[in-house]
Image (cartoon, rainbow, N blue to C red; front, side):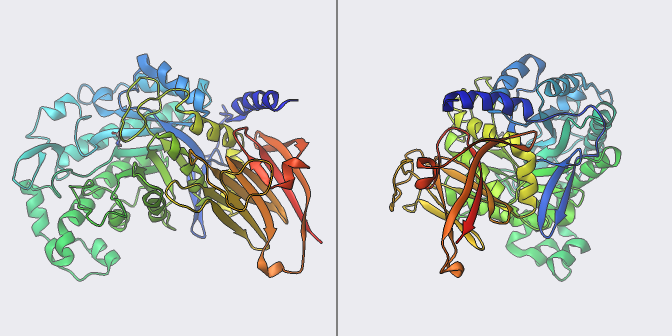
Length: 540
Ligand code: DGJ
């Protein structure tokens, strides 16, 4: 079999084996945690979200064909799709989820799971997805006021009527999911609101908000932050406005989420417009939304929104260093790492490997459909099959073994390497105790290379997982992996016992051939053919 024939066989098998959506009821999707690590279980099985989020206005039946074409091209196992409050409750108290039913039934046909995004009171710091009857009644549904006391296109969280209305609609959504998807679990997770917080000012200044701001900081927040009682200004000083905003918005989101969970208990999360961890001039409301779960407000959100399972970063930051720092800030013993949105620039798809290596539960670039909208310069200026190739080759590689990867990652057995553009170092070292895997970028497949130059497109990545004593699963793209013994093993030599190339079919290993000779003499070289290896090492 030639490599190209092998590749096309692999593609067919990968597509078939990606997900099997059982018709029988499994256990509810849920997150589990152990020793600071996290795992998403879907129908009781480990699941890593190889996701994609459609553009904001794409979740309408007439446009779904352009969404599915892209989702099928990239081999995603999960689609993130908005549910618009304005659309499902056009008339107050009357709900219509027929378009959602269409989405769910098409997702099943495409063997793809769904993460639904509740575009309710909040969408990117505005209320644009609220129904007309909410937008038109500012007395019942009051607005936030900015620092100059001007009402904004933002619903104030200090309104019981707004909370009641949003919560009732969200509960109706969850009830509908329970009735129509409660045994299938096509929908595996829900995002509650979208990028809460304000741009242009730091907190709500409406009369109700002012009165709350003059009051005492709630005891649960004081206790968690180890602070003495006082007003917001007294307790938090220059951070008072942002902390007040974060706490009060998080309380609102929490009440919406907990009511939804009470009827149908899916994992739920909130997403953050990011504060750049490397920006010394970062200012809430100016360089990022004030009041959302930005990294500096995670502790506040954890206190105020206990019913949320995860707080997540929407990563559009440029540069490997800011990107990696952000991943580290959201990867916490009390917070699973999930990237529900990230730039669709082709070069950034390799950060999927970083998320896997850190034990994350999913990764999902934004704006993946063929409706011809692009959010350039946040992402690519063209979304086409070619532009999506880097993401698609990664998903094609990993999709058949997503369960295996999720399981190994939860056990702490997976290490990954990602090539950085902004460095002169083109190697990385992955330590597995007795064994060391050295990853290098930009070398030809044949011959030694002491000074790897890096790849021109900086697209290199590699994944090494310990699957048994002296045994590793190894894969990658545009990279070379060499094994050696660690310094502690001096006096011993190593050899390959065998290097098997195979594939995962329904997460079970299927042997295809041995790599030997040129294919192993210079290290294990990965290009753009989706090769997965099981490597057995020995000492002598
Ligand atoms: C982040 C938001 O959450 C998305 O819905 C979208 O508006 C992007 N920003 C920009 O395309």
